[in-house]
Amino acid sequence: MDLFNKATKVAREVGNSVVNAGNVLSSATREQTELANLKIQKTALERKMESQYSEIGKRYIAYISNTFNTRPFDVQDVLEAMQPNLEKLSEIDAQIGDKEKVIKENNAERDKKRAQEQFEAEKKKLDKARDLDVITEEEYEVKLTSARKKLDNFELLRKVEMQYEMDIITKEEYEEKVRNIMQ
Image 1 (cartoon, rainbow, N blue to C red):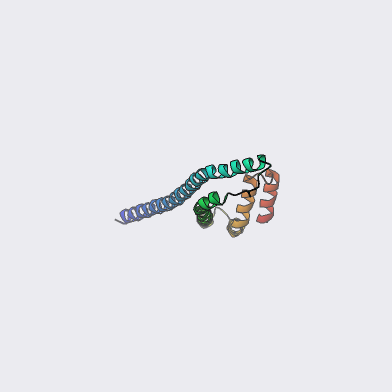
Image 2 (image 1 turned 90 degrees about the vertical axis):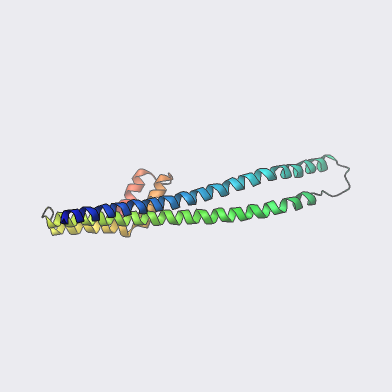
């Protein structure tokens, strides 16, 4: 019966992990969908305003080409018609910025959690190896310190990795920076 209880407990833990992963994925997908919808709205609004910008350009060309024009260049009616769209565009830009910030924070939080889980898995593996006398206490401490250092410097390492992925630094510079952080 003890084996059955252990199996049930493991199955429950796996199930909970799958549910948690599903919730995280669902949340990330929802955020990305909302961001995509905002960008679509922005593009549609900008296309709608293109004709108004074109009208301003046409009027300006007509004004310039008529050198004997005594009346001032006037597009106030077009600008007034554009004003609600410009305000909506400004709102959408703010919403896009907010949504991108939330997505970035969620990604950073998820990456940090993954780094914590990797550390815990490494520690568990090292604990088992030490308990079985596969590694010495000294080796254990060295490897655990290295794993902890990787977790403690997670943000720095992530920034260096982003620099490399964006081709800001070369592979050699990346490796050197990681080596310096991990020392």
